[in-house]
Image (cartoon, rainbow, N blue to C red):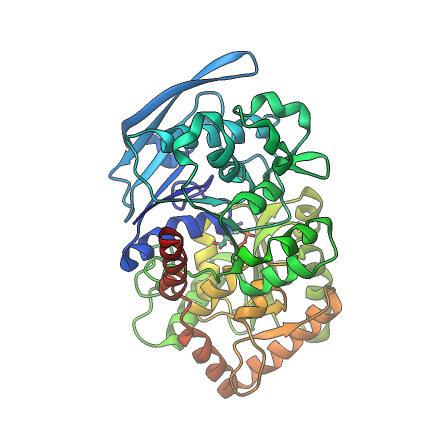
Length: 474
Ligand code: ADP
């Protein structure tokens, strides 16, 4: 069975968050279940694309806002990936030195035009007789109009019967646009225009939920939350409940391996104590922290969603209690939050990195004792899984995928959890973590339970494969 993943991210070619990790690793694991999964992403002008060789497999042109745009679909030769990666070279749209402008996916002034352009190009290629995919798998709102155009677009008639899968990595971003943009869309059967509509706008996420054959979120609890929350979109999800499922994300255990990871300073031989201590000492030396104290860390987008605003007060509360912890924070995003976080930088106690840096992220997972995830909502969250695999214990707000992966319990827990989205509860959870750290035996047991957890894609990839196969036979 052949599946094409259509996405704006795919690690390591293009990654801004968890979606990039997923699209860059799921295809490899699908192969083990008899699925050939290829990926198409836009061709960005970022570093990864510079030194690659390309083979053009399809080309064409389309008209958008008064001019013709000539595009090409290219296969990336020797990408180093375990699956075929294609990129859509659309001049003037994606040939820029960042994937998005800012973290929220709204960024560039022509975000609407370029997302439509990418979807149109992917559809045209899929519709061409040179391709023979059995199913299309779209990711987030940037590709949310594809399931509609497969069914009702005049130019893509050969796709009418093809099933489509739509994965929601984050339901807070809609890809919403005014109906004034209708002329930018490919032509479609007029009587179905209502399927594009939600709240009197063209709404990419809602369209995908209505038109895709199967819709999934990246954890079961997140699907439950978006169905049950009190919002306009929840009505839509409730109406489409029969085809909505939750499949927990996995991680690539080969990429995230303490024994072989090239981005960390000290690889694990066998002992976890030795691995954590050595990495902590190296990091401490480089950034002036105390390796004899417990270390709390945070890695991620600085946004409301991630609860970054609750970090600084909680850190202060924990620090003021007994001056017996260090804190490492890596991230960027909302300028107000960047300012708030950099202002708590304190030599020897709080180290902040206001940036996106893959190597530092790996080094934090390898050297810290705890990772904080105070998310207001969390579709899945990958950090807690990477962290556990590297012997770093999660302290999380129990929501979405965090609820599905982290349990607090004296006998068989894997971290510390709390309910309310506020700095007080976060600080209390951190204090519980801190006292467990002091109790060496219990702390070691907890860490062993974390490192023994297996979040590999194996199980979830099988779930995707089974869903695909069901659609093929329906
Ligand atoms: P998101 O909602 O941002 O997609 P996830 O937890 O699903 O959150 O995935 C985040 C991914 O991005 C992880 O691989 C994490 O390590 C990485 N990441 C986030 N921020 C940074 C950063 N500043 N530097 C390096 N990696 C980061």
